[in-house]
Length: 364
Ligand code: HEC
Ligand code: HEC
Ligand code: HEC
Ligand code: HEC
Image 1 (cartoon, rainbow, N blue to C red):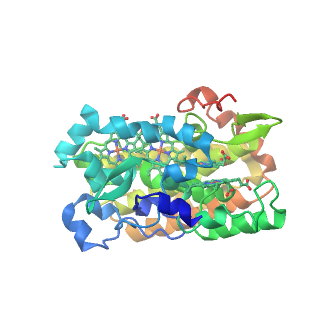
Image 2: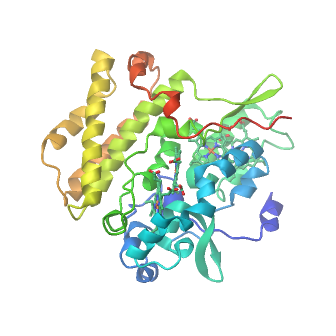
């Protein structure tokens, strides 16, 4: 499979945002003086890019044609041609003193898949496969090895589960590790960047909702039904899981953002309000679930903090709390059975509120 890589002349770089959460360092760490000098304020939010590990969406699309088509039509890729031309984009860039959006590290980290061109970082594509599934270099060979000379159809089930485990261990985020996969949305969608929001006037990213944002235009879940290929919505059970997981991740990432806050600006106020709304919703879900609620341990941790006045500069305390919420969220996804969860059905966002329309597979 090395030939695939040789055919591909581009070398890609990755960002902390594209990394597996397991290896993710705090994204405010100051670890590269060189990068820092390029943009002293905004770059505090990111690690230096990893130049080596991105295969690029075409590499995945060779086998995953339907997923590739969905991605091409999703906001993650259509923004590549459009975003920098919007008056709002130009206004943000101007306020931050940035000349070119597509080569500004401060925009690339969330809006694009980066590449190196003549020694400089620039946008190559929009947000793409590996932004969510993890950079492919360490796992692609494992992922596409179905055992000896066998194809996917003739792969043994032992080989398959070993392959999935090994890919996961090498940094792949797949639907079977849902906490990791869903976590990848949040460093981009829960915008924890005071300069960007307070100075640049960028939206604070408080509208994100995991279930309704993953089941619309970006839905890719291709399954065979007889001879026909379907792009299947999540099952009822999966929807409940995505909904609750989304709330726990909202909580985790609001706390992380607030932990980083240094000033009482728009960014801080928006996150604080979002945090309080998330907590009220979790309380309602907790009540609906009744005595066997899986949310009680989480709320027992957050209640004392939320009732206190939340203010900037509580880094350590809130970060520790976010870490605990993170492991409770992971436990929630892994726990089985989730029998009582149908009690929250009336809280699930209706399909009319999904972001965009799912795309049907190509007619063959
Ligand atoms: C050589 C063909 C091939 C390439 C290249 C490929 N895949 Fe796959 N992928 C497959 C097959 C086949 C399956 C189904 C495997 C199964 O269900 O056992 C799959 C399954 C998946 C899954 C579902 C869960 C899993 O772990 O099996 C994800 C997610 C995925 N691929 C992502 C990617 C991404 C991202 C890339 C590019 C970095 C990529 N794939 C490149 C063949 C490929
Ligand atoms: C690398 C950063 C990044 C990651 C990871 C990411 N997104 Fe996004 N997403 C964006 C950006 C940036 C936009 C806005 C694109 C534009 O309009 O130009 C966006 C837009 C969207 C939209 C369209 C919103 C609209 O108003 O129509 C949806 C839906 C979405 N993302 C869902 C998700 C989900 C679900 C995940 C996780 C599974 C995710 N995103 C992961 C950066 C990211
Ligand atoms: C921390 C991640 C992050 C960074 C950094 C970031 N953005 Fe965004 N941006 C987003 C997300 C996520 C959205 C989609 C928000 C939504 O729909 O709620 C978005 C939306 C936008 C929009 C509205 C897009 C549309 O299609 O309506 C513009 C304009 C924009 N960003 C410009 C910029 C510019 C310019 C920069 C660089 C200075 C930048 N962004 C940096 C995450 C980010
Ligand atoms: C914005 C984040 C995001 C992007 C970009 C993205 N995926 Fe996914 N992918 C997901 C999520 C979330 C799921 C489903 C989670 C679940 O099971 O509920 C998924 C599921 C999958 C699956 C399993 C379902 C299926 O269709 O067989 C495959 C394979 C896959 N993705 C491949 C890709 C490929 C290839 C690309 C790029 C062309 C891509 N993904 C781009 C987030 C993303």
